Image (cartoon, one colour):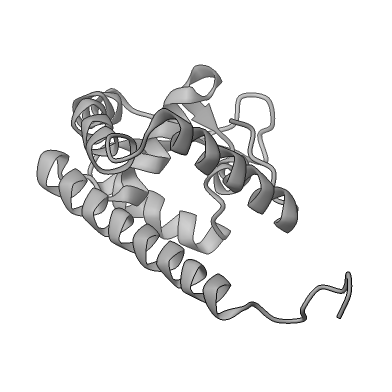
Length: 157
């Protein structure tokens, strides 16, 4: 086989892949449960509120918000409908383009986000950061960068 790479993963590579998938799912499940318990927000709510809180004027066009979240427009539309009914966001006419709309973070949404942020960050530290050494955190970051580059995914974070 010389310098040729295998066309499929080795048994060990498959074990690591499965560990990655199962661990990521367990972390997402536990973080979602804690977020819901601590703040009554879903991960979708939190991600939407985070994106809006970081945006200029706490507002984004739906297409930009969907890109930021990595969601399809239909998923975003359903999420925004649920959040609008709870007073967390509202849709307004775009000030610079009367043909479009913007999603705006409401005062209630900003309060909900602020209340959820500290418990959520504590849970991230407890579940993801604390079990790892600083060197392992760096290695995870490097691995994630390589994986993102391999998929052509760019995040502006």
